[in-house]
Image (cartoon, rainbow, N blue to C red; front, side, top):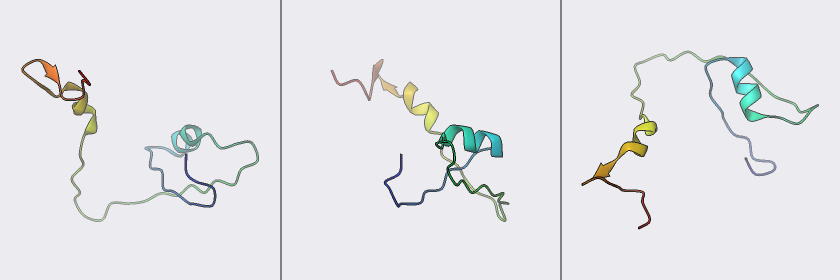
Length: 63
C-alpha cells in the first residue's frame, strides 16, 4: 500500500494483471500505460533468496 497522496509505479506483464493486483476500490482512478525497454537491462531475481542456505541453515531463519 502506498501512503495517501503518494503516487507509486507498479509494473506487470498485462494491463489486466496490473489493475487486479493493485486492487483499487470501486470507482478509483487508475492510469495504465505501456512501456518499451530501449536498451538491455539486468534484473535481479529475488525468488531465489528463499533457497539461500549455508550448511543447511537458511540465512533467514531467526534461530
